Amino acid sequence: MSTLRKYIIAGLLVWLPLAATVVIIKLVIDLLDKTILLLPPEYQPANLLGFSLPGFGIVFAISVLLLTGMLAANLFGRRLVNIWESILNRIPLVRTIYNSVKQISTTLLDSNGKSFRKVVMLEYPRIGVWSIAFLTNESVNSEIETIKSELAAVFIPTTPNPTSGFIIMAPKADIIELNMTVEEGFKFIISMGVIIPDGPLKAEIIRNKVAQTATDS
Image 1 (cartoon, rainbow, N blue to C red):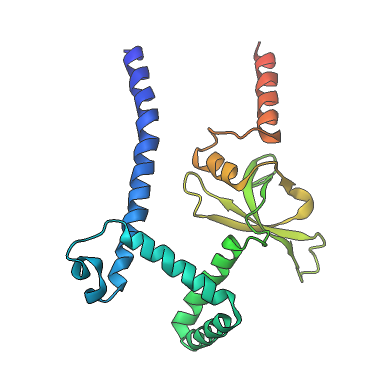
Image 2 (spheres, rainbow, N blue to C red; image 1 turned 60 degrees about the vertical axis):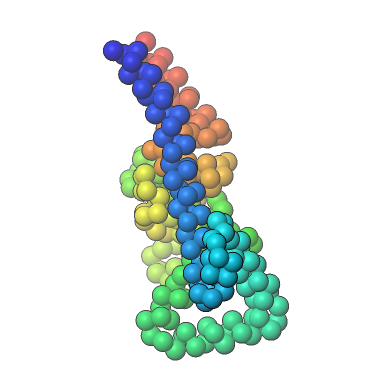
């Protein structure tokens, strides 16, 4: 019975990641492929050529992104973007949503930014308990007189869903930067600590296990 269970688990470990990857890629491809519906009906391939072209929506979406990026990168395009944003900023509800999404997108996608580029570790939610976090702001100025330490903002994601979590401001001296990429940090969190990247964190865990084994024996 144990052998059968072992084989079933081994099979699941092969097929589950593969199935999840296929489903996610299919969802992304289907979503991009539907961008073809943005074209007027008479210019859509199915009506223009008499038959549909699978994948044409993906090519169309990538082309739109490239053209938009090329336009926004030059002086004339930036002026158009500024005019467009000034119009949106005059609409109360739209202004709040647009500016929030833009700030988050700029923070995550800007290659020159430092946000979400470092994986750190700090004692949270209490002393002696360590949590993995992502540095979001290296310097947060505090106007509270009782706070003398220089603060940094970190995002502590929840497991196994890292899209939710907590933003806390902690003294820089209490934050330890890890030799770990952001991708490795997300793997560690999503796997609920099962996948431990090589580095100081894994070395420390191994030392603790060895010490615990020696104590038990």
